Image (tube, rainbow, N blue to C red; front, side, top):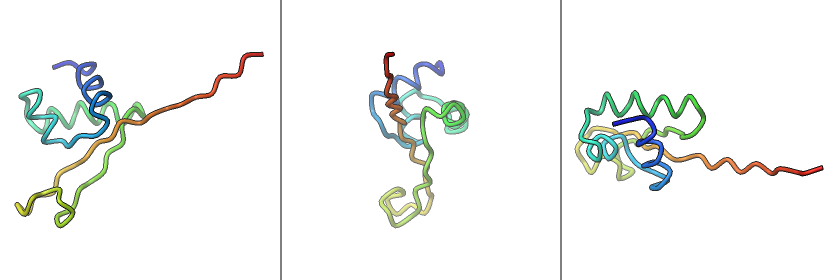
Length: 79
């Protein structure tokens, strides 16, 4: 698993949970979290905590984190 692969995965899916990323790449949640945090710091994705009762934990009592791809649309004006 490379950081670029996670970037492309998030770009394609636009939103995913920490568990989904860990499962997709067959890595631990900790490893997925480190990679996702890298992209959060770069401003490419945003993290959001899912609390129980919002459908994020399916009644298991354990909250998960959701990540969303940040679309940076910059307008370039040619002079």
